[in-house]
Image 1 (cartoon, rainbow, N blue to C red):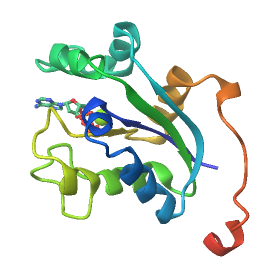
Image 2 (cartoon, protein in one colour; image 1 turned 30 degrees about the vertical axis):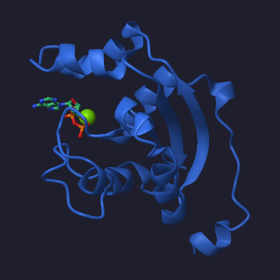
Image 3 (cartoon, rainbow, N blue to C red; image 1 turned 180 degrees about the vertical axis):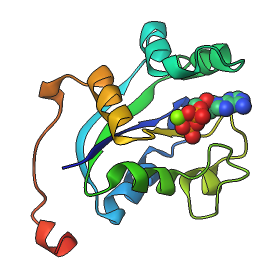
Image 4 (spheres, helix red, strand yellow; image 1 turned 90 degrees about the horizontal axis):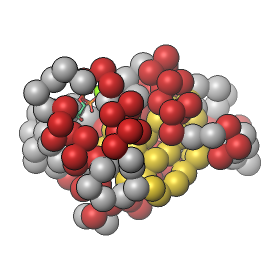
Length: 149
Ligand code: DAT
Ligand code: MG
């Protein structure tokens, strides 16, 4: 089944929003298959944001992500990659709709609380970058039949 990589950034952890964010994915019906809190190395941050290496905000982004611990997660479910992006909302929190995580909790693009993979292939790359295979648990919630026809 489809999986995506979700990271609660340092601002989300510092502001005590870890539980709120996890709750939104749980109640939507997705399954948590990997979870850890970690201090991010500069090397990991640069690899994660490699696609933005030439952007003017790259240096600040790496500084921010390495400034305080993050919560890294893998969530599973049908269509989870695109759905997670909807739950998260637009990159700029001022443009993000109310009801989305960024829309409800954020005000500025450089403190937008959370990362979510932007495509299935990106999710595969990011999951492999952040998690060892043994850190992910393949399990099926007992309520599976009440979530999927
Ligand atoms: P997203 O996180 O919605 O996938 P992105 O991949 O375009 O957005 O950018 C990665 C992160 O970089 C984003 O979450 C916040 C930061 N960022 C993007 N554009 C920025 C900008 N114009 N100024 C400052 N930070 C920016
Ligand atoms: Mg992105």
